[in-house]
Image (cartoon, rainbow, N blue to C red; front, side, top):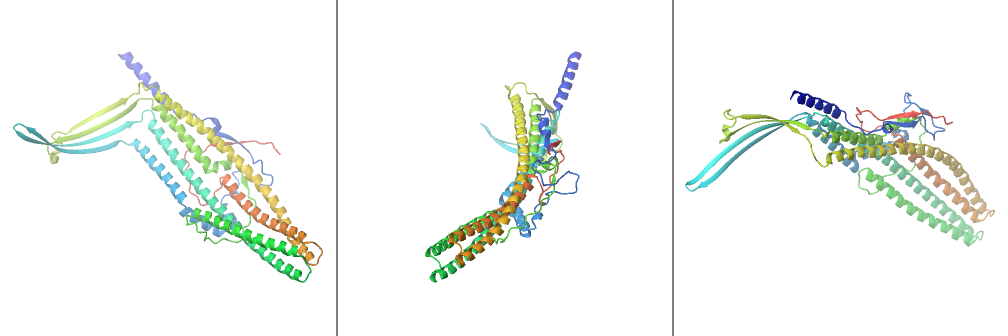
Length: 487
């Protein structure tokens, strides 16, 4: 008997030590992601380390110096329907966390019953009354740390929902800025089309007057009238585009999309290039990566829970109660009873169900880890593409700015020479087309530069300075810098 007791104690101790070490399916790939020491696409962009006082693209919304945009973002954050809906996901996760945290304390319940029963005998009827009161306390002993793992999993899920809400919030801010610039571009193009139509009308009047004097051919009149009609059609199309852009922005603002928003007629200036932090520092700022990381940790905690489901479950139940034939006689002390019961539940045979559940949880962690790594490297590519795209757009914008100036001068010269009979009207049409294309392209390129600045800020996880804070007590995945010897 003594030997059996010693073996039992030894087995229980070894089982306790084994189960207390929670299994993990995370690898060093996700814990330490190799990151370059600098962005490969940065040739003319300053890169600073995390100790520098330069804030990079943080507060990027303010750099546009557009007070109307700031006001629109404030309205959207307050009234956007989808953001309001997503906000409840955070509260739901918080309530789930509260439920799981309650396992640290025992559960106490009170039950009171009263009944009256009628029995019929040959000799007559008999009535019997009974009243019961019972207080029961249940408590599961966290012998293997399973409940702690469940709490950790719920806490990580809550942090994941917070980070996801922050992602949605920042995405909304970016969408509002993009939509506002699209509205401004549509309005500026509409003004350009109207100005061009007015100039063509003036040209038409001059050509008609010259035709009546016999100085021009009828073909020139018809060609000019064709240009005027085509420009009027373009104005009608652009007006529809402007209304659609306004409605898209009004939906983001949580308003009825009646296209009543007043647009500004000029795009803001493109902010100057700002300093960028090194990849290993900036990539940890992206809330979508944090969301995926917390989800990965939560699944890993779920693996520990699934592993410990296979071990015995020990709980205590204490109860006390009284019964009487009258409700007011309860708790008079005459028949008060109590009990204390310890319950030990050991899974003996379940056809491999618990083992399969643990393996399923492990595979979920492995799968999520690869998804997390894929997101991280796609984020690197997103930043690289936006940096190189910014440089390309700046070059194109400079060239088209020169082209616009030359085309406008050429347009005036060609028309003056046409009136003097030095060139044909075909030359005038070609110069007008080039001037119009250069002006239109320049407006579109400026909008693309603004859109690129927004995309770059979002890709880098930069804060627009209007977002919620995330309490991060669990640590973030480390991004390990890899020394680059590229020139």
